[in-house]
Length: 248
Image 1 (tube, one colour):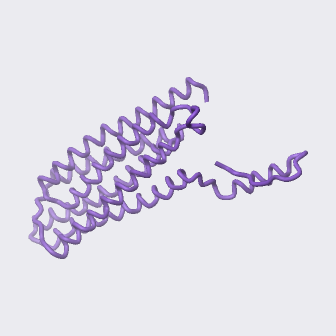
Image 2: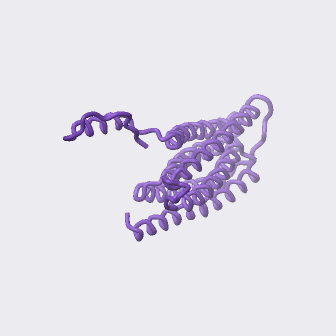
């Protein structure tokens, strides 16, 4: 890769990460406002999720700036591991959020009732937020594929599943709104059930992301690659035998 191409790749990656930070700020403000106004646990869980999304987006932005630095005397293989480490930190934040949501959801379902104040405005705003997540995930995924970036790819996966978690919350808040409108109190429990759905999505994302980033940090090679290299080397004219082939 030429220096000009490398600079262009770095610029596009930073721009995509910065745009993700900006949209993250917007979503946090919207969802925190809705959580305060409605008292919905589902929206609160999404607000917490979005706050961690924002933290992850900032970490991604900073890590990209470091990861694209060239190798030097102290870092012979470059700084690419910074992206894997940022994704690993993101995994821990996701799992902590999921545990809190699960605990609060069971508190509301089993021990005390919280009266929420759902509205069509909240439903519309959440739908708008889902659209922002969809556009953000597409933009990040495009840049991650164009210039292979583990951090941007992790963010793209994260935000694409945010679309579904927000959809689950919309179903929950819609059920609560219908319950209030038609006097069906049992529908209000859908909010806590929706929060559990969000927690499940977060745990799934975290487990997938954690496995991949751990593989990156530990230099796990693709399955069968070492054997294929050994075979190719052994079949090369003049080579007697290969020993201890290692792949990083």
